[in-house]
Image 1 (tube, rainbow, N blue to C red):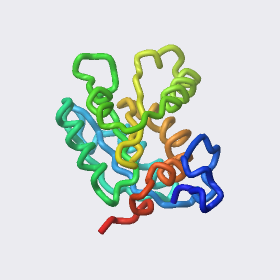
Image 2: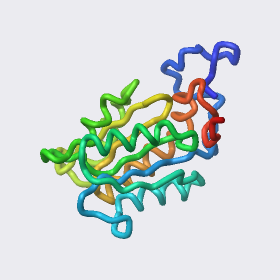
Image 3: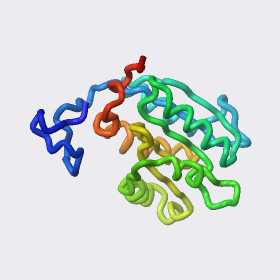
Length: 191
């Protein structure tokens, strides 16, 4: 999907402002992972916000998972999801605070081939407009692992809705298209 030199692109997926081949209406498969020792799927408002944002935009929910906090738990589930052919993007909620038990970012960071630092900057800016200086205690991260974008969000429904509807869903198809490289097209299961 990514533009290459034969298509008139640079071939490097560089700093293009838009991938001419990517379409905003491309359906992508999202995996939503809630990291929590206290929530269930029935009372998971942050996860619900992410699912709703993707589905409202016409994308597909490939899977929804709830896992206990813990470095190995987070790393294991995200690795498994990245390897699935029907998952084009992974969004986690929870485990991003500053307590000793909040290890989502630490678990996912080693899995990333590329980081997307602008995501954290954008989230902080939008979060500050919504909640003020309280955004200081919120850590977020985004990057790409084996052609799959991964976004780590806090376990706060307003924050996850803000990040998903303002950043992730609007940029998702283009980002997936650029990140996918030699993998199957977004939403397509590899044989």
